[in-house]
Each structure stands twice: as structure tokens, then as C-alpha cells.
Amino acid sequence: MSETAASVTSGTVVAESATARGRRARIALRGLQVVLALFFGFASALPKLIAHESAVESFDKIGWGSAGMYSIGVLELLGGVALLIPLLSSVAAVSLSALMVGAFITQLAVFDGEYAATPLILIVPLALIAYARRSHNAELLELIRRRS
Image (cartoon, rainbow, N blue to C red; front, side):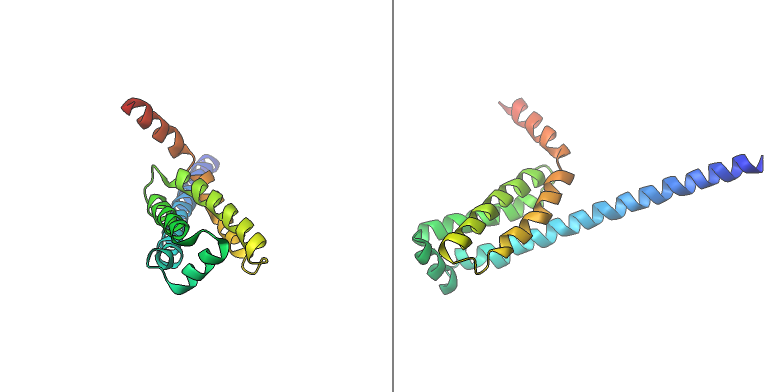
């Protein structure tokens, strides 16, 4: 009888531990989304949207001028905001990853790879978010189908 009680008790402890671990993982993932949203919104998009001289200089060197700078800034800002919306977080992470692939290629081709590691580093947490929040893709698709 005591063995049964011990196994039930240990089973409960294991289940509670897994629940607590899952909760901590969800909180950490949400925190990561907030940090990346702040990064893309403020550190990356804002200089482009206010035409900071460093952003203007970079986009002139690329050959895209102010139209390209503002476009990329808007995409980054929208992606950062979408990371905070549960239904859009996975799609936003994939979209921002694609933008970072473009940034990586641009860094290599135009700027001789000076800051090429930054977009690659950002792709890793974005891929984690895209994978972890992938269940929202089916919900989003269903919502789109209902509205069509």
C-alpha cells in the first residue's frame, strides 16, 4: 500500500514539475518575443523611420535611398508588433527571418560582411519562436478562410 501511495505521490510530483517547467518555458518564450519586438521596433526600425544619418548613409550606399529605408523600417516595425500578437507571432518570426536573410546577404555584398553576424544571430531566436508558436498558423489560416 505504501508503494502505491509513493508512486502516486511521485507521479504527482513529476506531473507538477513538468507543468511548472512548461509554464516557465512559455514565460521565457514570451519574454524573448517581447525583447525581439523591442529590438525590431526601437533599435532597428526607429533609426530608419526617423531618417537617422547612419541609416540614410547605409541605404544610400546600398542604392535603395529613402524609399527602401522607410520600407524596411515599416516592415521591421510591423514585424515587431506582430511578434506580440499571439495569432501572428509565428508568421511574424518567419517574415522577420526572411528579412534577416536579406540583411545578411546585403551585409556580405555591400558592406564586406562588417556586421553580417547580427542578422544570423537574430535568425536563431526568431526560428525558435516560429517553431514554438507554429500551432497558431492553423488558427490564423482558419480565421482567414472564414473571412473569405
